[in-house]
Image (cartoon, rainbow, N blue to C red; front, side, top):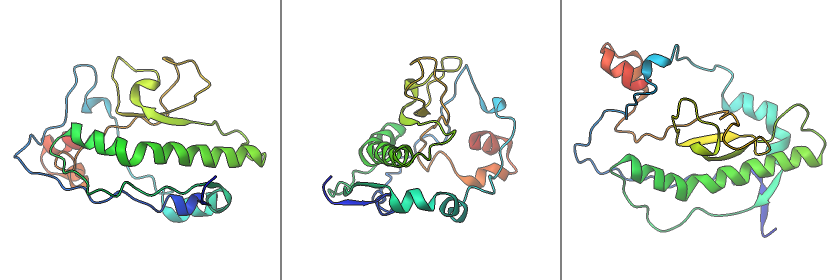
Length: 182
């Protein structure tokens, strides 16, 4: 392994700031006939999901798991003006880093007989996991040993540019904005 670093050090590299070209794009989120904001029953904060708790619970993995160091691409980032552009930059800067970090962490747990009742997961495109009502999310975390096409997506993700989504929409007085938040 060339130039190995701790998983914690590896995860410190973030993508560059990606410029957004404002062309008066639609601020509406993509809609679907299959699922909608009405399918989301509640939205809330996960109090225990914070850096302090993560470090407390996973410090040994983060400090002792090793992976090859890899810098972010150093060419100036192209601006985005659409969801397609965001998905392409996500693929360029994030996909492989998440996959490598997961492999490193789970390998460390397996080698040290600390996996316990955890399930090893991989990260990829949304259609690598089973679909619910034919909805294809942008990303998936799934058990690679489960049968493709039926394995659950343990954390479906939807990539949205900042001009389409904001945390401030959650408590907006306007119903339309709260719907866009979901």
